[in-house]
Image (cartoon, rainbow, N blue to C red; front, side, top):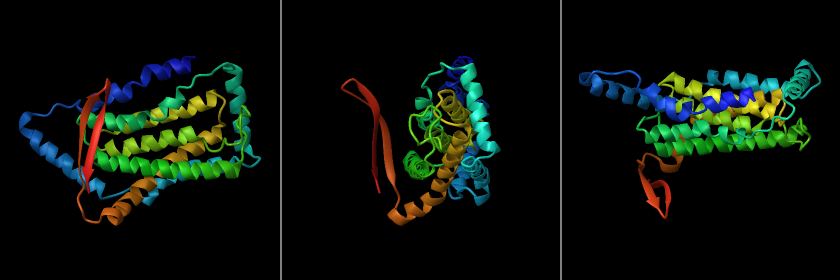
Length: 265
């Protein structure tokens, strides 16, 4: 119960604290134009430089850890001991905040856009990147789930490895990090904190083994990094050198609020 209370008390960081972190420093009015121009130049330059191959080391280690657990070894024994300890201390834990928490970093990206905080890409490119990363993550984790055929800790089915919720959460966290780490590194840290909380909740809800969660984090991070590597080439292939113009405006119709998106290619 303490874990759930901690998560509930801190999850609002993505929608309340992040804009404050971005605007925490005060800049003299005479220097604002030069600072904005410099930031836009940095963001444009980063948009042309996707993640380097060495950045895949960490997610590769996470995935490798999970794959090793499929054998009968110390890593697999740690899965069983971790489950036993959690179930002994929290046998009745059953809260499904993880079903919503996994999307929080993605929601933060659009929230920051609405607040006027620019990321590496415009909102149309951000949406395309996120869809691509989720597609890569979904296909890869589904294939591995069927191949591994690992029973969940609660015995509900044999699709335990890797954790899809955790993969989705870390894909969204890496998406948030890629777009806003140059604005403030704390934004990326907050996203990864939420993603980690999602993985922990999967353990406490007895839906995954520890190695499932670790591997899920690796799949999620790697999927978004691959998306950022592929997207510039896919975009060039699809629309060439044409420019894409778009507009996003708030709307309210029939007692429903939302956003209206229109664009030309």
